[in-house]
Length: 167
Ligand code: IDP
Ligand code: MG
Image (cartoon, rainbow, N blue to C red; front, side):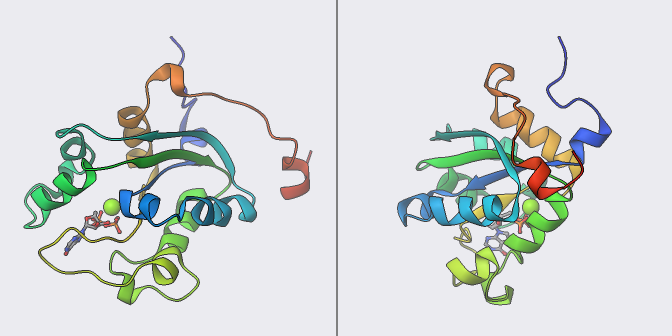
């Protein structure tokens, strides 16, 4: 069957974003969605999910040697997470800038973590509100991990001509 991510060019235009459970509990879903939506990015896929115990280990497999790994995985399987795919030109680069540093203290005001979170404590899972893929390959892997093929929809947005101005 045809892959939802249609090729390199498409992969460069999509990002997996998750609002962690503390963002959900604090009522920050709409604020975070607004930041991406107001910029002009397109929300293509969204769901709310409580991950199974082992799921975060797959998502954060590259961090398994880190001292906070088990705590982070327990945290992320303990409540509802909003999983999304956003699409647009430069969405990974801009998305990472918007999210900003892992440590909210090092994130400027006006960035999501700078605006909405306070601390990173070395040995405890950092409650920095949000996850975003750091490059096209991880975006692709994360989308395939978090979503079943039938959950991945496509639609064209009528706003695009007003955002990109080319069609
Ligand atoms: P990122 O989310 O900014 O991409 P990563 O290095 O990929 O940062 O780490 C994934 C997540 O693990 C972070 O968002 C944070 O929740 C947690 N984390 C990373 N480093 C630390 C740490 O030193 N202490 C506690 N938690 C951390
Ligand atoms: Mg990361």
